Every structure is written in C-alpha cells, then in structure tokens.
Image 1 (tube, one colour):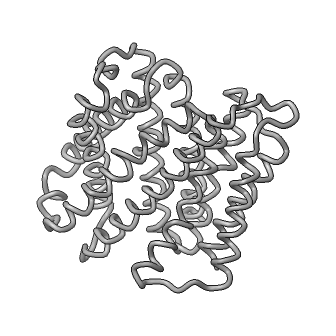
Image 2: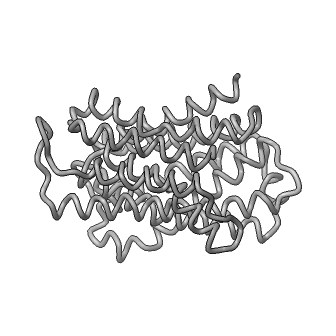
Length: 299
C-alpha cells in the first residue's frame, strides 16, 4: 500500500512542480529557466549524495552506466525540458502536461522498432485513445476557454509531443543503465538521479552562448529563481525519490499506471491556481489520454 501511495504522491509532485514553473516563465525564456533549474538542482542533489554517502555511489558505477545516465539527462532534461517549458508558455500547464503524458506511446513505438516489443491489440487501442485525446485537448477555444491562435496551438502541440518523444528516448537510456547495474540500493538510485539532473544542466550551460545569447539566466530576479528551484526540487528531489521508493515497495505493474495520472492533478492545479480554462472537450481529452496510457502500460 505504501508503494502505491508513493507513486500517486510522485504524480502529484510532478503536477505541482509544473504549476510552480508557470509564473517565472511569464518573464523569462524557456532556455534561461531550464539552465537555472538544472544547474542549481543538479548541484544540490549531487551535494546531498556526497554528504550522505560520499563518492562511493559514483565510483561503483561502470563507465557504461555513467554514459547512459548522462545521455538520458542531456536528451530528456537538457533538450526535452526546454521544450516542456516552451509548451507551458504557449498553451499552458494543463495542455502541456497532458501532451507530455503520451510518452509511453512513443516508448512502445521505439521498443517495437528496436525489436523488443510486438504491437498487440490492446496497444493499438491505447494509442488510438491517446490520439483522440490529444485531438480533443488541442481543440481551439470553446465555451469560456480563451481563444488561442491556430499557430500558437500548433507550436504548443509540437513542443509537448516532442517532449514526450525525447522523454521516451531518455527513459530507454535510463532503463539500459539500470539494467546494467548488478544491484542498486537507494543510494544508487539517488546517485543516478543526481547525475542525470546535473548532466542536463551541464549541457544547457555549455550551450548557453548559443541558446541563451542574452544570458537571461543571469538576469532572473530572486523570486523567479526561488520558484524555479522550488519546482525543480519538488519534481526531481521529492517526486523522483517517491517514484523510486514506489518501485522498491510495489510491483511496476501498479506503480507505472498510478504515476501516469499526473495530467489529472495538473489540470486541477492549473485551473485552481493559474486560472487556466479548459473546454469540456479539453477535459475529456485529458481523461482519454490518461485512459489510453493506462491501457498501454497495464495491457
């Protein structure tokens, strides 16, 4: 029971973090926000690992595991989360989180291409349900929902679905890293998460001269920095820890579906705290995406 509750709490943390990011993003670029998030959070998480366990969790990692974990962080966080932040700016939290939640569909597609999975009837049904949900979610202004331009909606959809694809690639890389580990205690999970987060920040920092030419990440006010750091710690400190704890205490067949309900929480927090509005079609779209994901992962 504790493992299942941890998975639900993790999904809630991811939704709360997305809601926290929205306000600082109103005054800064997605790249600047991501640089601040991952350089600061990565440093804090690495520092926690060193303070609690020293260098042992890192020296125990084989070079292959380190490379796969860093690649996962660079792809999923360094590139993927910039698109994630871009989606927030374009179409809001509720829509973007719903779109990003489709990543299991892309994961399944990649696994099929790699020859690891077969397309089963339930998978096809789940994917079809997700696609219908995406179409409804991205339906332009209806009822009391503010009208968003067709171009903005298109760019928001591209940003969200691209994030989902990159997340699926990052998760496959991370799964490969975990599969290469003979055994991993909680310190190993913490070490990998810290390394992954720091790698995303490192990539963004190195790319800053081109991606953030005006060095906006150095001009953020303290309040914005505090909110970005708070959201990142909620997601990558608390949320990922709870998710890891859930996998330790409960079967993956239960943890994965429960952690996939983030869009439901995000819709509520976005409507309540950010005053975002979704039409009835949009709400149905979120529900269909979650249902389709559950069909995919549960079978």
